[in-house]
Image (cartoon, rainbow, N blue to C red; front, top):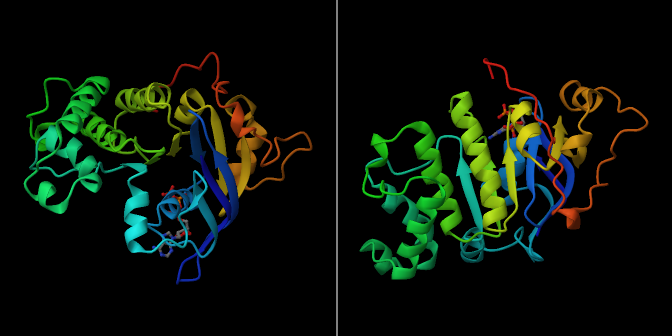
Length: 278
Ligand SMILES: Nc1ncnc2c1ncn2[C@@H]1O[C@H](COP(=O)(O)OP(=O)(O)OP(=O)(O)O)[C@@H](O)[C@H]1O
């Protein structure tokens, strides 16, 4: 379970990117964080694994406080967080298998890592994941020979091979065309169920969030202004998130979602067809 308590970040420039954000993410939930450009979505995701140091508040993963860990402890704790990036962050000249196995680097000795000497169970796990992400038989291809969608699948396999307690995806579809974006979102939702792990996705495209996420977190100007099941995301709530409008009386209040209720999907039952320019 991931918990943030009153998480805040003010950059040295004085930009207050996050204010008092408290959320709990558990089970096999797919949670989409949406909000206008500059709302603080990336900052939030990066504060969780302390790629960005929060200024205030706490981050807890299964009751272990990540804020406050020293460098060595943090390195260990990061193994439990699978990261998926917008630009994939793969090593281009290495193969698909080498990139996936790099997700196990935190678990083997430096010497074994140098010789790329991974235990057979890691290799087996990597093959399993390549099948899950639809890249079986591609293990020996170099990453620079792959399409964007295939690269993101490698990125997802690398995150999941860590056997993380949560997967964080920072704009995973931004570099992809609409159809590939849908495939990647579908894969992330499959991963949540198949690997029994919560997935938090920071995403621009609200239609993708509505179609694939169980729950929406809406940020506006660094503040969490919506936290609820996707089915409760109304036009009014989008006004609150994207235009800073006052919430209507009946709006889903922040913090009303029961995180233990992750089995019940909040996704829209009948997703509206996506338009060509998505
Ligand atoms: N390294 C930094 N130094 C100073 N200010 C920053 C830094 N990174 C982000 N900010 C500021 O913090 C605020 C939140 O930025 P952030 O990138 O987290 O938002 P975002 O919602 O992810 O935006 P986008 O959707 O455009 O990626 C913005 O005002 C931004 O200018």
